Amino acid sequence: MEINAYQTRAELLLRSYMLSDSFVVYSSIIGGIFACKMVYDLSQIFSSIYFKGYAGLSKSQQVEWNNRSISTVHAIFITTMSLYLSFWSDLFSDDQLSGLVTMRSSTLSTVVLGVSLGYFLSDLAMIFWYYPSLGGFEYVVHHLLSMVAVTYAMLTGEGQLYVYMVLVSEATTPGINLRWYLDVAGLKKSKAYLLNGFMMVFAWLVARILLFIYLFYHVYLHYDQVKQMHSFGILLISVVPSVIGVMNLLWFWKIVKGLKKTLAKRH
Picture 1 (tube, rainbow, N blue to C red):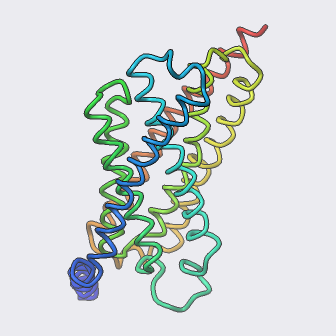
Picture 2 (picture 1 turned 60 degrees about the horizontal axis):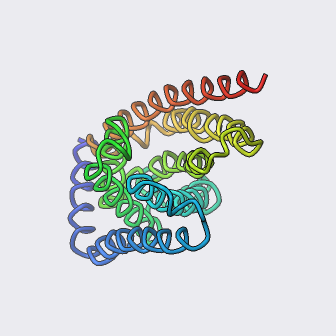
C-alpha cells in the first residue's frame, strides 16, 4: 500500500515537472546544446590562431580536437557542480529534515542536469555522425545510460544525488583529452605525457572506482529511502551505476596497461 502511494506520488511529481517547470527544463537543455556549439566554434577559432599544428591536422582530427574541447569544458562544469551539490551543499545532507534524500531536488540541481543532458545529446549526435572516429559502441552505451538516468532524475526529482555522484566521474575527462592532445602534438615521449599517465590512474581510481564503491555503500545505508522511489527509479539506481562501474574497471585496466607500456619504453 505504501509503495503504491509513493509510485503515485512519483507520477504526480513527473506531471508537475512537465507542466510547471517545463521552461526551466527545456531552456536548460537548449542552453546546454548551444553552449556546446559555442565551445566548438571558439575552439576552432582559437586553435587555428594559437596552435601552429592545428592547421596541419586532418579534417577528422580537427573535428575530434574541437569535440574534446566541448567534453573538457562540460567535465569541468559538471564535476564542479556535482561535487558542490553532492557533498558541499545542504541539499542532500543527512542533517536536513526536509524529506527523503532520494526525493530531494532544487531548481539549480534541475538546471545543471538539463545543461548536462544538452551536452550528452550533442556529443552523442556527433558520435553517430562521425562514427566510429569519435568513439565506439562503449561510448554509445555510456551516453545512452547517462542520458536515461539524467532525464529521469531531472523530470521527477528522484535520485538526483546518485546521478550527481556518477557524474563526478567526468573529472577524469580533461586528463584523457590532454593525453590525446599531447599525442597529436607529437609529445608522446615528453615528461608531461608520462605525468599525465600517473595522474589519470590516480584520478580514475578515485573518481570512477572508489567513489562508485561509496555510492553503493550510500545506497545500502539509505535503502529504506531508495525502495520508496518509483520502481523505474530503483531499476536505474541498480543498473546504471553497476554497468558504468564495470566499464570503468575495464577502462582502468587498459589505462594501467598503457602506463606500464609507456614506462617500459623509457627503460
